[in-house]
Image (tube, rainbow, N blue to C red; front, side, top):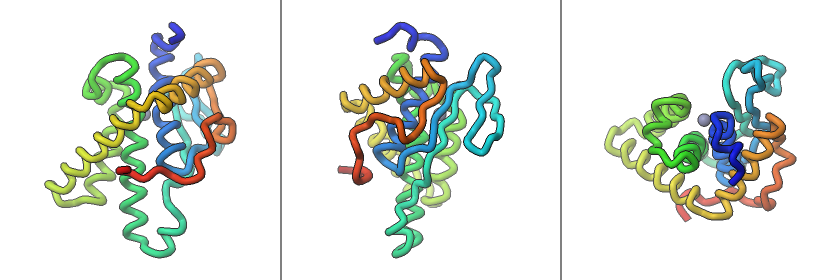
Length: 185
Ligand SMILES: [Zn+2]
């Protein structure tokens, strides 16, 4: 792999690429993803300046057809998919840097883990079931990142992010994904 991805900016590129590729497989893709420039700022699609190292702007996670039929099922499904996409970033970074996901959780991945926790407690208020949900999501994410094709896609997206600081959702050369993945195939 290119040495540049071993730098701090490279770690961020892999992290954001992990989110991007997960959104493309498990959800409805992204509008864009960004890495901050030297000024530490990112301008999002609403024209707002955000101060952070990296940012992914996902499309909605809801499945419109399910949403019309069964609102609760659609919320539950979108919740799990968002948890998977949240954790794919820090887990990709951990895999790339050969460190534990816990180590990433304590640094750049804190918001991702907090976000996943928030969703989990919302859709599974029962503590025991909530714990099982966390384990299920972790299993899905780890299995996903072990797929050689997925890891290649993450590296390819990270390369573009590193070089250009931005990747548009329509320009991602992922194989056309006609249908979102099942969560537990
Ligand atoms: Zn993240």
